[in-house]
Length: 289
Image (tube, rainbow, N blue to C red; front, side, top):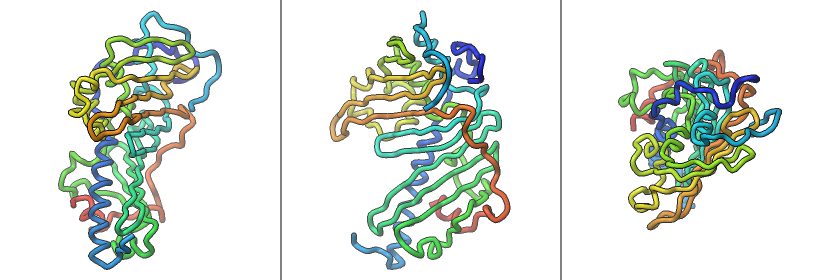
């Protein structure tokens, strides 16, 4: 939020539910890609057998806590910011700029046999898409798989399933607004802290965001999942934490969204010069499975 804005201003883009499964899409791509790379590496004999800051006082209690919390969710009028999404064992980090519909989204995946770590980052600005892959822990893997270490400019026409490739889907990558809307009651605890009970069972947008949660195993408990949200002194949402209980074989977990560095995050620019090349066929083979 820009200085001087009203923290509880009406945010038009949050009036309707916004499908936002970007993080889940990247997770599926990374998991699939890691499996492809592991199979390729094994076939080649590589297996080893082994906060947001702001001046001024915290927001005062609101007569309508749910509306006040929804008003704090970032929208298209906000400046760029950093984010972190923790979905069980998966952790996504990135930067989002609503003004240019640009986003960086990164996720790491560890593989045990052969042992290596893959860090995959997607960057998109409007319709343009780039990907960067960094493989560590197994020397020569980049060369063997013919994957460059630079940014790769992607041609969407060469991707089999364009609908599964990440794209800009709004200024709320953690889908916090959809979660908050499922709560019948939100309580303002003071000092910018809000609590409530979220229903994760009947909202497709929420379900597409948290794919690591076994909603079937949760049963009725999935209709009343406690959450805590924090709004910074500048009126911007800084975190939303869902405390998902244990159910069946699923352990208790925290689903965390953090938004920070509003207006201070680095600008997202198209890679240029020696930092980028056209994606080779090996990159499309990897993504297309």
